[in-house]
Amino acid sequence: MYFKKLITTSVTASLLVILPNSFVHADDSWSNRVSILFGQKHLQKDIFDENKHSAFGIGFDIKKQDWPVSIAIDLVGSGKETNNANSGSDVATGELHLGIRKHWLFNNIEPYIGGGASLSVTEITNFSGDSIGKQDDGEIAYWVSTGINWKFDNNIVVGADIRYSDAKAELFNSAIKTSGVYSMVTVGYQF
Image (cartoon, rainbow, N blue to C red):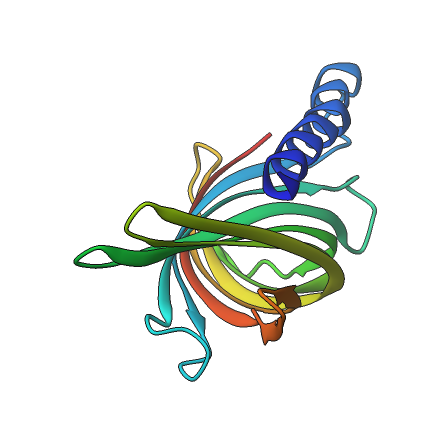
């Protein structure tokens, strides 16, 4: 439930911020970017049986040309399904990363760093036979990232992103850390 609300709210908010920016400010004083991210999230091994989860995300950078940093709005999620005969579990984490990113451009190579607040939601579904138990929990934490991009003349941007997000959740009467390191490939477009 929290996960669906997080996705809906963050996508709507992102579109409301970015779309007016690109149409109203057509004088090239803005340098915005949208990127798709995909890869893995590496969680603590002692908490989850499977500590490598598939990850996917969408990232936005909003920047006026004379600003030193861009506003970062990223939505990332990860998940893993584990099945053992008649039992198993589904683990999903979703995070809205709000903060700033600083890019440096050297020819076509663009390293960057970023960080900010993370609105994190974790949902675990355990099933055994016909019995299903599902719980979710969320919190506000932080995220940091670094990466490198290659910019092409047609405004396409390809890169690699490493980010850490700190989070925990109270699920099934246990406090668990859902912190993890994301390692992702990014493909974006600057406009």
